[in-house]
Image (cartoon, rainbow, N blue to C red):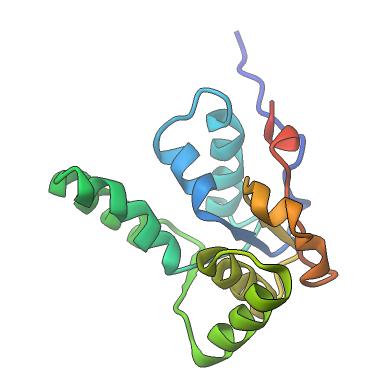
Length: 158
């Protein structure tokens, strides 16, 4: 039997994309609803079809739970995987990104991490921002920049 790969909501070839933390979590934890879609997305990135960007805040968010649960081995595994995954640009929070994030946070009342992720996507000229964050959807992530939009929970379904 041939396994079907999802295509709904995946980026067009060569579109620059940004990835929010929850997409990494779905991928790493083999989420029952989203894993297949996330695997297809990461395959496109790895094969060089789509340049990808995320903020280094993603790593911070990924490591909180393993550290909280004192699972140093899991934290090291995540750190190693994210640090070596090909074709993902990990962008640190620069002064420009912090400034833009503060503006987005003030204007749209989103969390600090969401504003940093969005500012990173905008500064890196991402065409699509992949995430599953209701506060960004509710607060008008499309308004952040005409070229940056949110994939909703519904479009992540296979």
